[in-house]
Length: 188
Ligand SMILES: [Zn+2]
Image 1: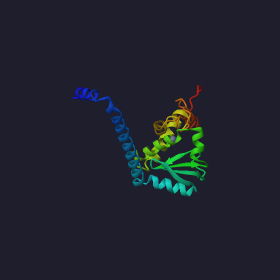
Image 2: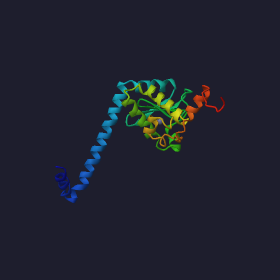
Image 3: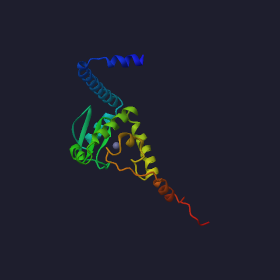
Image 4: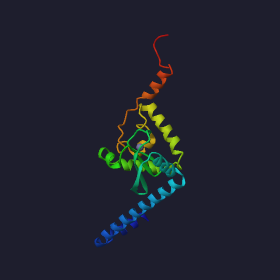
């Protein structure tokens, strides 16, 4: 079956190939748009986008469309979280700044945040938040940094998000042990 099909593809006249390629591009673009519609619908239904919009309004953000069903909430004014951008559902919030400003330092930051929007959809919405908190805690224990070993940040691409990867030294475990007085000593 497979080899027959391969041979058939090879017999397509050269003149037909650009059209075929065009059709492939068109169909992949269409399925891409469909996937963005799906993400938008899922994050609206699971209420994560609603929470994102409430936060955006509470932070007196300026709202605008970001393409692919994303909403950009720029000049977000609440004091937390202290980072360049964060995503809740399909809403990408920019504390104290704009996407354009952040993109000057991290050109692919919107691709990174869009991956988080997918993660909300995959986690059925709000369960993403406690799962993300757990992943941040684990990352801190392993590396002393909440992002470096965080499965969600790694999946969204650390570099695109502007993170510097810290080595897995168990720095957080050591700090926690020291705080609990469990640090091993050589004395009796
Ligand atoms: Zn991120």
